[in-house]
Image 1: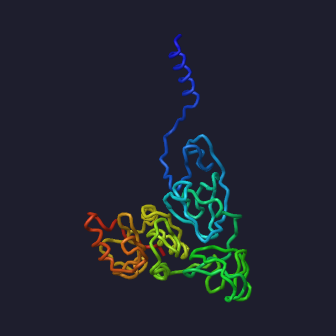
Image 2: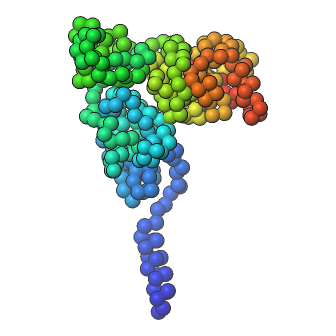
Image 3: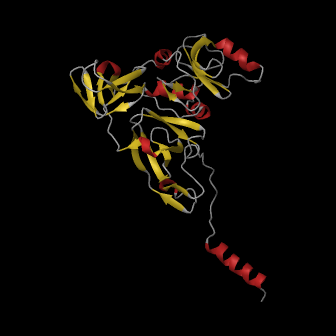
Amino acid sequence: MSIGENSGSQADTERSRFTLTGRSIALDRRINAIRGDLADIALAGRYFVPHYSCPQGFSVTAPRTAIRIKGDAASTAVSELLHGETFQAIDIAGGWAWGYSAHDNYVGYVRADQLGVPIMPTHSVTTRAALVFADADIKSPEQLRLPMGSRLAGEVEGAFLKCAEGFVHLRHVSPVETIQNDPVAIAQSLAGAPYLWGGRSSDGLDCSGLVQLCLSLCGIAVPRDTDQQMAALDNEIAADAPLQRGDIIFFPGHVGLMADADNLVHANAFWMQVVTEPLADVVARLTADHVQPVLARRRIRQ
């Protein structure tokens, strides 16, 4: 027997020993933690990789931290975590944690030094930003500035929330169970906030980040990206029905909230900030490059 024949026989044996059966499943890697070498243990019955790991929860300790495509500060940010939100880490190496955000399962890398012991949030920041003071006194030194949507664990003492980070005035926070009822008002309160690819905080945010943040503060959980949001929000508005405040308009790679029947509030790269402008103007800008500038019109179910 030649060497080639022997090698082929061994290869056939190996292939038969590790043959996988069943239909291959295509999974969206934006929301399923899969790498070539590793995956979330929850996917063990659906996707094959050499190793699986159980995620470990951490809370974000920085005011905000980017979720990046790679474990590299120069890598593109695809989303963002806010202070007190949870990141489920599957692998930590080289100063970076790989895993997914607990609120929308978005996968990527975050700086490991901006993750800490998990907290049980009691309050969230519901104004554009909250200042954390050293003492229960607005004249005391400022410790941190936390963007809208940040989460804190603490106890109320007088006019302040006392937490591990310091003292936050109660005017800037609400109990986590508080549900607001007007996502448009929240979006308009962020007028002028800079456009930031991958951002979802009042310090900088993109179109779908704005929609996700505003809806979440109203108790409505939606996915991170525009196409995911369009698929998840299935209450289509009839073509001949007039638009109203709170309706969500989807464009190619873009999304915004109707402020009223005619005007859209959105974070956009044209103005590089959150603005309210006529929907007709937005459609006109897109018409030159898109045969169908409006892809869908959705209404939040009441």
